[in-house]
Structures are given as C-alpha cells and as structure tokens.
Length: 210
Image (cartoon, rainbow, N blue to C red; front, side):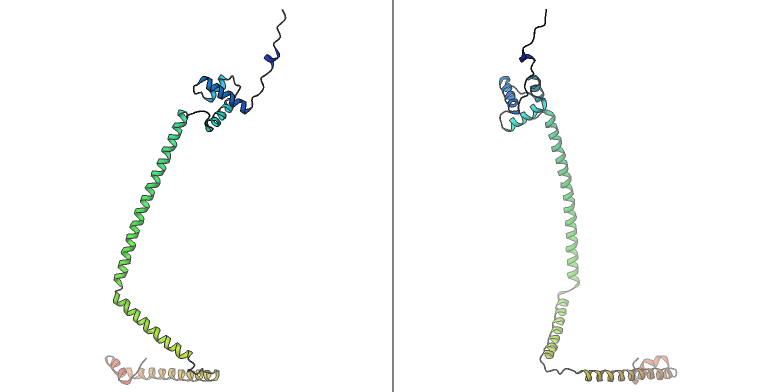
C-alpha cells in the first residue's frame, strides 16, 4: 500500500512569529491558564513557538507596561538581599571612619585652642600696648621727616658738593684709623707699667676707647 501523502499544511513549517504576534500569543496563553508561568515554562508549553530568551524579554516588556503582574524569583531576591547587606556593611565602615576622623579633628582643635591661649598668656596686654605706642611714635617721626622732605624747604645736595663731602669723609676716616692705631700703641706701653687691676680705671680716666 502506497504511503499517504501528508497535506501541504502539515509538512510546511510554521512561519516565524513577529514580536507582536509572540507577545499576543503569550498574553492569550496566560489569560487562558490564569496562573503564573516562567519564561521557560511558557516556551515549553507553546512548543517552542516562542524561544525562552524571547519569552523572557516579552514578559519583562509586558510587566513594565503593566499588562501582566510578576514577581522576582527567590534566587534574585536573595541576591538583592546580599547586595543590601554588603551596602550596609560599607556604610557601617564609612561611618566608623568618619567618627574616627571627627574624634581626631576635635583633639586637634583642642590642642590649637590650648596653644592659642598659651601664646596669649605669654604676651601680656600691657606689652602689646607698649609695642603699639612705640610703633605709633616711630610712625609719627617718619611722617614728620617725610613732610619736611616733601615740603621743598630742604635744599638738595649737588653732585660736586656730595663728592666733596665724600672726600672729606674719607680723610677723617683715615685720620680716625691712625689715631686708633696710635692709641693702641700707647696703651700697649702704658699697660706694661700699670697693674692689671687698674687698667679699666686708667682707660676711663684718660677717656680711651678701643
């Protein structure tokens, strides 16, 4: 007996579904079954007309559009809990570090305040007032000299006069050096004839300076 030919519709492969058709097929299946299914179960029950990966993506999209209800699997919830615990541990570590830094900063602030009080006690208020008064006096003298110089009453020194003063100064400086040398030589002679205990008295009496 010759084999019976199958109808063309039986031998022809089913056309591939579009994403919209796959979503409609899944939604219709869920409404008819009226119970939750995973992407794997849906793909298997629909005889792989929708792949597992496509079913997972479509379920996620429909859940975001609030077309279906869904909940996370137990494993995913556990992972979320573990992540939350890890974050809490990190927060505890950061909190402890900040507390230690706060304690260190407070101690440093205390030392600085102590040093500041010590510095203030070392310089009495009366000393500060005296220093201010001295500075004010110096300022007044400088302002008076400046006013005199800028008033025009001071005659400027010419180049020739300044050079003459310089020459005269050099002459007197040489004379002073010669006199100092002579005083030293004379004192050397006198010191040999005077007792050491009377050296200072003799110098003061003669007006000698070295």
